[in-house]
Amino acid sequence: MAKMLDGPVPDGARSVSWPWYHHILTKELTPDAKKLLTAYSEVSPEDVEAHIYSIRDKAWGIFPWPCVGEFWFLSFGLAKHPLYRSMVLPRLKAGQILLDVGACLGQDIRKCIFDGAPATNLYASDLFPEYEELAYELFRDKDRIPPGHFFADDILAENEAFTSGPLMTQLGPGQVDIIAITMFLHLFNYENQLKTATRILRLLSHKPGSMVLGSQAGSIDFGEQTLKPPFHRSSDGTRHTVFRHNPESFERLWKEAGQVTGVPLKVSAVLQSPTDFLFGADSSFDYSVKKRRYLTRSETRRLYFSIMRT
Image (cartoon, rainbow, N blue to C red; front, side, top):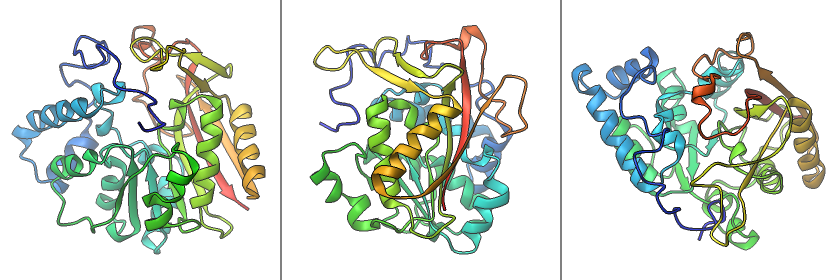
């Protein structure tokens, strides 16, 4: 069993009665998402919603992540990062390599391609191999994505399994200029976040200026938080926690990872408040009490970050 999950799907997790399983598309189908699906994927406008529902339910069958139930694969998180236009796209167009870890259905990769980045420079990785074909079905672009650009791998596998896995053997250590981790690291407790960060740094290019960037759920008050049912317990009955960062604790995490791997880093992180969208224009993150269904604290904010090799 993959260490990212450490057990089977919890009983009842695939129920469509959970509040994060949205039965009706509302604000999730943004103009950007509809434009990409019609112009890039060539889905007829009148078929877009049915196409999305079909793909979402197939993804829900693979694993019922709350983000799948909420159609987050229609949200191009990387494109909302403040460095996307100024740094990520220009670097990709100049030939640099990007790896999206925790890519889900590869929506950020497709947005990069739609915005002019060459597909040959883009790679994606996620735990479930089924995501590769489902992503092709969603975006209808199997003929435009080079083979071998999706890696089904477990970033938290045992050392021997990770070292012999596709990220380390097919892509290779020190080969990636930009690593995107959008809405990913916050799935883990502190110990596993540190393990993930050190492995990401092993994949990062040795060149100064190589960077990791993304966004995730953060908190004004940092610390471990217990998940709500049905993901609140592991297969052995112990309670599942995830670590929520503020900017200071997030910097400490990556500085610790840099010390472990011997990689000098400059870390920048900022919480986006409900009224402040100067650092990233992610208005899709809903802070209202009624939307706090899966996370457990009212202090939740979106945390944007970049980690640059110096």
